[in-house]
Length: 255
Image 1: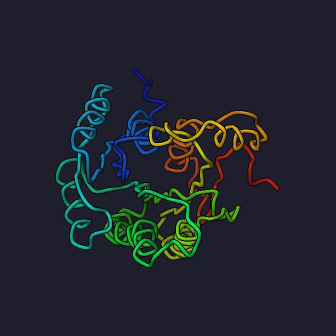
Image 2: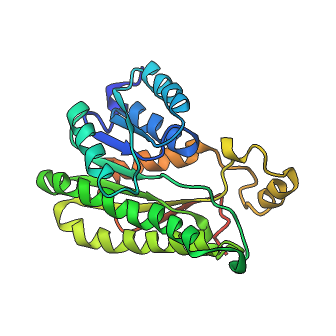
């Protein structure tokens, strides 16, 4: 068991979107280990969601499994109300949900795919923040953490749809941070590098190795690297940090 002094998020309620696999699941586990009650969110693959939920509950974490489409205007308020009924109002919002991210030449994209990217990385953060901010304002405390990507800073190609949407999310992060700061609410972004998780298992070894060679620290990032930063930004230790974009990539955006 974790000693009480090491549970800085005791009695806080956290929602991590897209949290039944990969980075999202590790973030949810880390927040729970730090004392938070955690809402686990998914839209598809109920079997995988139940397995992840069981894993989180097995650690003694107070959690709820919430199904919902984070890009849907009526689904988001329903989700937030359901979390409130099961765990309490959301104090910590981690905007992690994503869709497939194929790399294509610009001639091969269509607007429907661009719109999907904007829905996940601009519309969803807007809808969820709008639903959660009133409670945060009332208690004069809140944490909103956007999960971005190094691709925006690096201008990765051919990837315009995803990079443009992540750029929009970055702008949302900066503006909202200024707007809600008077209520003691911080808004920050974490931008991971390529951290292989389940969905990268079939990626070509040569492509992986070429990327790893670019990492100044000389090793792959692991999900715990990102999860630790999420817990820090959610904690009181980060109460004077807002509007920032923390890159977690072993130094690949130093230059």
